[in-house]
Length: 265
Image 1: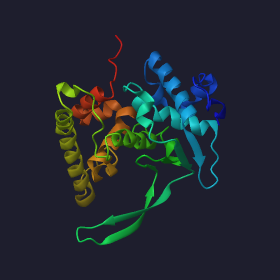
Image 2 (image 1 turned 120 degrees about the vertical axis):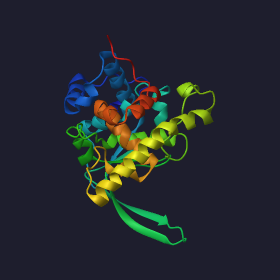
Image 3 (image 1 turned 90 degrees about the horizontal axis):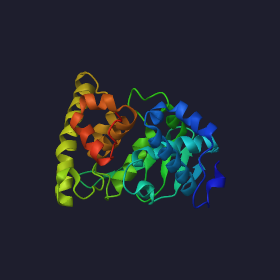
């Protein structure tokens, strides 16, 4: 499993056959300019050098598994200043063969503690490892039209968490959206994301309670602004045109943050 990459200061390129097989399986990765693909390949190699993969419940980590995760995980930071430093708060990536059961604990408004089990396809822990279901990672090869991608979802959470809680607003660069302060940048961010989230949440509630048309995005995004950000990031990176048709302002915001290059003439 690309173990030969670990310990190398400058990793060599990923073997061409393995890289081409990954691009063929996940076509949204290949949907970019040649220079971007080379940068994606290099960042994926650095990611494999720096991260440690662990299989749960006897799952075996192969080159295919590690490279599939790496190539998709680095896509959101492809053009971000700092690159892989956005992911420097963790090393471990745990792969389950399929969805996992996570134990949850919440406290309601009266102070009563509630514990329950939640079935999850992935989870990003603050300053901790990322957990992924291989079944769902593989699904990313055929769910592009639906805007679904568990790897991008969890690594979007990691980007969001760089500013603290996963609240839907990642750390914003100086001067973002023409602002002069971090506070103003954050206000400008939520001026776009919050209405999009509220609109999506309302449509999701109407669909679930009253039989209205279900929104295109994963309904899990209606649970909080943080989850909406992660769900929207999935769609942004695997089916940007469809997301833009419904959330043009949000896509423009993401274009500025993720530093999407202008199309070549």
